[in-house]
Structure formats: structure tokens, C-alpha cells
Image 1: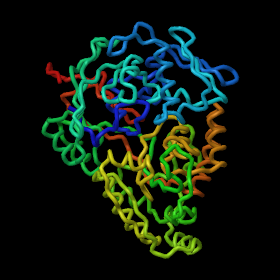
Image 2: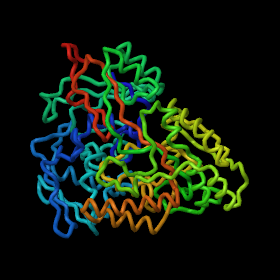
Image 3: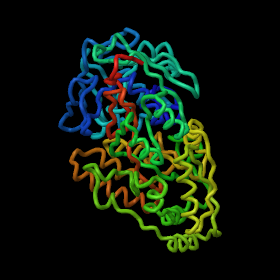
Image 4: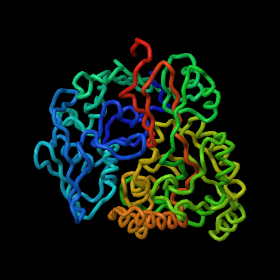
Length: 490
């Protein structure tokens, strides 16, 4: 039994936007590439890293042979092409921006897929190490179409069994999996347990053996329990406040004018100056998390002094900017936030912090699943949104801030930022890319379409009865190699 901290959205690699979905999908949908424990990209359903032409416009991916999907249909290059084409062209796809400026996709033979680009796109390998690289059964896609996520079929150590909305998702060992001999669990049931206290209590009682995320309020006590182990790793993502500056018709559509005070960049900058990041994160999260002011994780090779820079808490400057913008103080703004204990606790502390800077912050809690819909359709003024992060910074920036990108929930648009992000994605030199992302962060901190708040740690707790649970920097709880230490199975 695995305790999930919220209900995932549809189990469809193409349309999913929930980090919780990735945890379930990792058990049933393998990818072309994966991350190892060191954060390096390694082949999974591909046989080696892509070959990229000298001009950067042709990317050739060799894929495995002798593999079948959970429905028994063959895995081959044409199946890969079908999934990638769906990711790139489907109207409701969340993967389109991640895949870059693709011109065409072809299967040149049974074992090679070739991506042709309009211009070079260096982040593609990293993108294929996450949901864009999950390969779906073409037979299942043909039969189920847009409803694929109701009963997904992929290649993985487990296969989908059923889902009880708001309660559980069950998968079972797939005997057709190419490495089935090394899969030890018969079934995994993911139980939806939104209350952090309940997840902790169920770990102690043994009713669940793994919890995907643990609140910093509970981790110290759980770490002292001799029957439990704590896994923690760095975090590539962030939590931040997204401002709705142009999302009228839904994320991914052309932005439109929204006539509210937050449309003024001075007001958004004022909000940023009102956030006492260090005090908030230490008080709310018991020093487990870290302040964040940027989408670029400081532990990655793409970080720089510019991307690590953090505007100081300065409520006097905030009040000055609000006066320059001509707004009445205190300015009433509404923050939509998922109603988990940690998210609400932070929002309430934030409310007091920004009050010093002239903001009257109204908090609107919503269920996590509801929040996914709210952010897509733009039904918010300010929204506390998290991102689990990716190894390549393009996925932490372009998807959320490039004009009309699929996850640009705030509807932000800047031709200058678009140009910086596009240029950064076209080159392979790490130092050059770091410089461009540093410049992008400087622009983001001037415009503040997102005010970055803090960077979590991936904290997973599991029973000593279980071995082989793995959590890497991408935050995925990997259970493909997990097993009960005793002879019991579950």
C-alpha cells in the first residue's frame, strides 16, 4: 500500500499535469529515457542516448527489440512514433512545448525513430526522460482515444487494474514485462490520503508501507521510529505564486488583456518584495525546505549568480511601488491554494508577511484535483502552484512562461523572454545556456509573472518491511524493484 498525498489527474502521459500522476505512471509506463540515482540521463526503452546531427536538426533514437506492451502488442519504433506524434499534436497535450519545434517524426525502421527539427532543441533528451518519453500501446490508443487515461496500457513492471475515484488506484505485476523476473511485488494499491497526519499514522500502524510525501511537521518524529526509514533527495522544482495576467481562454491559448491591478508589473514586484522567504520557510517547514527566487535549481550546472540572486524582503519598497502604481492600500488580492495542510499553513503565514507590504491577501482553498482545472482555465487571480522540476531548465521555464505554452497558466507573454528561452534551448554548451538562463531570471524578476517562494526536498518514508524503494531528484517514487523483506507479498 502506498499513501498518495492527493488524487492524480487522468492517467494519460499526454494530458497529465499532476506530479502525483507521475508516481503512478512510473510503475506502469516506462520511458525512452530515465534518470539514475546520480541524476544522469540513461536509456530505458531506448538502447542508447540519441544521435544528434551536426546541425542539431535530426535526432535519432534507437529503441529496444523483443518488448511487448501489457496488452501483448509489439513495442517497436512505429509505436514510439505514434506516442510522440500524439504528445506533439493532440489539442489537449501538456507535452507539446516540452518537445520543442518538431518538423516531423518518422520510424525509419523497426528499431529507430527520427525527430526532425525546425531549429535545434537541446532539451529533448531530458524531456523524453519524463512523461513525453512514456510510450503508449498504439492498439489501446486506437481503441480508447481520448479515454486512454481511464485504463492506460504501456510497457512497465506493473499494469493498470482499476481506479476508484478519490479512493485508490491498483496495479499488478505484468507477466509480459521484459524484466518481469526482477519484479517482486504482486500488486500495488495507491491509496488517496490527502491528510498528512493520516498518512503518518498509517505508516506507523503498517496499513501503508510507503508514503509519497511527508510533511516537515511529521518527518522528525517518523525518523525516530525504528520500523520506518526516511528517504530524502534534492528538489529540481519550486513552489511559487502565479499571477493571472492574460489567461482568459485557457492555458496554451493566446493571452488577452485582464484589467486588474496585478496586470501592472510594479504591483507584482511589490508582492515579491513583501515575501519574507527565509522566515516563512524556516517557520512553516521547520528548516527542511529552502527559499527560492528562481526556476533554476542552484544545485544544477545551469545555475549562476544571476539565477541564484534573491530579492530581499523589503515591505517599504513594496509600499512605494504600490503608490507609484496608483492603487489603494491595502490592495485586496485573492490567492487560490490547494487545501493540503502544508500549502494552507504556508498561505496563512504568507498572508501576514505580505500585509506589511500593503496587500490584503484573501485565501481560497480548493481540492487538489479542482486546482488542476482552475489553473488550466485561468479561474484565479493569484495561485499557489508547485512544479516538481526537471533536469533540464527548459522544462522549468519555457513550459510556464513562453507565450501560449501549454502550462503557461498565468497567460504571461514577453517577446524578450521568448527569445532568451528559445536561444538557450538551441545550444548545447552548458556555460552558455547558464548565462542565458541567468538573463532570463533577471527578466522574470523584473516582470514577476511568477513569484518564486521555496524549494522543497523530496521526502518519502517507507516501512523497514520493504526494500528497494528509490527516490531520485525527479521526485518519482520508484517501486519496480521493491520487495517485502519477509516472504509476504502485497
